[in-house]
View 1 (cartoon, one colour):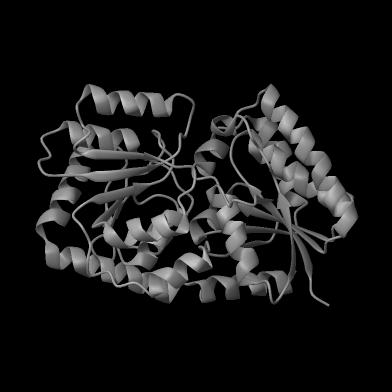
View 2 (tube, one colour):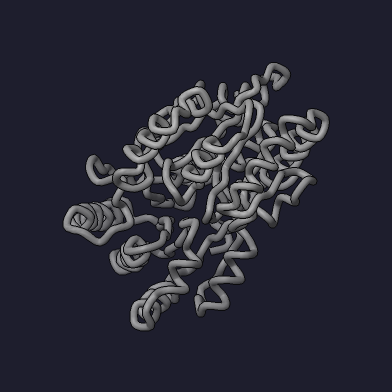
Length: 364
């Protein structure tokens, strides 16, 4: 009999990096385990997910009751649920602990949250003590790298911790593997949340300088309330429409995502905080040269000028230097793209990740 796993949060449209990651897990291991998607539907307040407010309390209560119902109905062997920063930390830990109370045999917390270390370092003593107590009741915590395993151990998380690299969409991988990358245009590419956290305002500042010939497709949805209004205003006020092609999209279609990753020249992702972003893995899979910051788990798999170009978060001069390097060094640029693809194939491929996760589930 297959192990039965209730996994979430998910949604039918696979909107959001966590839902996409969980969908990749379900698709990749569907033949080995019986998955029950914990679909979380949220219509309002998506740019305020981390805030403690009335709307989030409403959704919390609704989702909490739904979780209990799903556990009682399906009686899963395992509940696998994401752990994030801010008030979502207590919410996630409460969900997992409640699932065990109502009959789930094992509870797995899957750490996401790019700035989780910054958040946890600044928690007050009481809140941190409560969170660690809830952590200790989990049977397993999954992290994306050694960095996060060491961090949790140092901060008193006593649960079993296992490293499982982040998986990406199997359909995306299949399409990428069947496309030639020989016809790239000269545009740079950004895909992610549109806001300060991902370095979007840094990109705008770069465009305000005398950068010369440069154009970027800036794709994503609003990170925090009013970010989109601010970004649009800055582009218009500084007459940057010829440099920045702003595309508002909560979730790119598979066809569009593949097209951008295989037709654009360089992926620029100057993020300030990360866990291990799926877009970096998607970019490596596509063999597109990558400019990004050495944050989170990224430096464990990538080395500056070996398979990536690293810049410091918020350093405008370094971003400009990286752009010019990519524009003027065709041979090195192409080599970095091929090296990123090699890193994906040897360290981050779906076969490697699914093997890691399969082992985790089977050894609970």
